[in-house]
Image 1 (cartoon, rainbow, N blue to C red):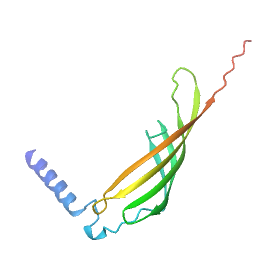
Image 2 (image 1 turned 90 degrees about the vertical axis):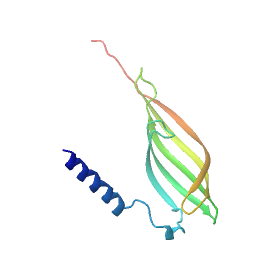
Image 3 (image 1 turned 180 degrees about the horizontal axis):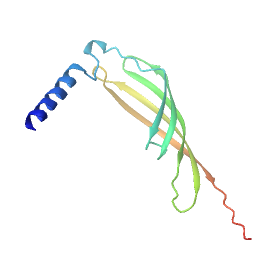
Image 4 (image 1 turned 120 degrees about the vertical axis):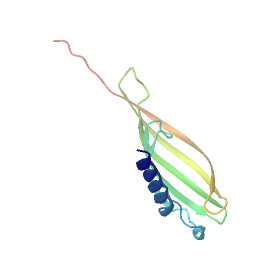
Length: 123
């Protein structure tokens, strides 16, 4: 049993060494993508939201990003409601060492109540 565990741990360590998740240091001229589309879970919309992020401009040391999204947040547990949310954010990315960035931003989340109508008929 101990021999199998030792072989497994050795294989995992070798796999981590041979398959790095980071790119080499010579790719330090990384550019922020101009357009990004992604799903955010438990973020600014509380449950989930689909977001579009646009790189407005990028210089050697700073970049400016604007993000808009649409999502759903079921906040009320007592009544069936559909709360639609629309997060909007503005961020500045400050380039640090190689591919490290500091992101500073602010945003708002607009909420639209879409209360589900329920009707009870008596016969």
